[in-house]
Image (cartoon, rainbow, N blue to C red; front, side, top):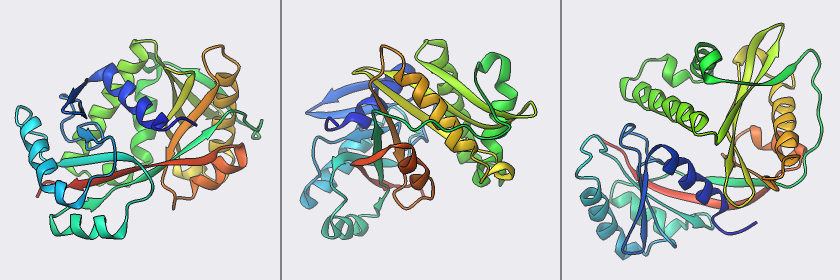
Length: 264
């Protein structure tokens, strides 16, 4: 899998709803209508930073986003190996914490058919209330009503709508007796890549093969299209979903590493 493949799809998604530019060899990503989105408003570095460069990079981020004052975080991200203990320790002295994930990729997909499940494409226009309700039900932090986080999630859902309107994304649903119990987006990205987005299952319907069947159906449909030869998604390497994706044919790849300063 090419280096930076998932990050390249991240930047494609941001271009659909925001802006991407190069400044002194560093890629600046911004989504002005969702200023609290850490991974959407960030500096993408071409390589892991040296410890002595962190102060300069933090200052650069503050300057770059000075015209977007509601972006109060700093996010530095890059692709490569997992962050070293030394860099993480030095970053912590500057108030930074590690926020990392890992790429999974597949060019073949196991076919899975869960019982009593209907998997089909949806549209935001026809199913927006159901999509939003399921997204909230899957997220305890949004249910708890943290204002900044709710604003971020609303901004993220606006991006989903923009991706669909551009023709780059299709939203899929998993239904049991007509009820939406699982959903995910499939985004058509350059380079023959299909990007899964926001795969989720309602808490009351987990361990019923909803996610497995949904991802299998979507993945096989995408790979049957002339534009797609590789499927990508981002995962928490310590999360439970990684085992589902592994059984379906995904393999772990590149790390996406981030150092973040959260607003106080």
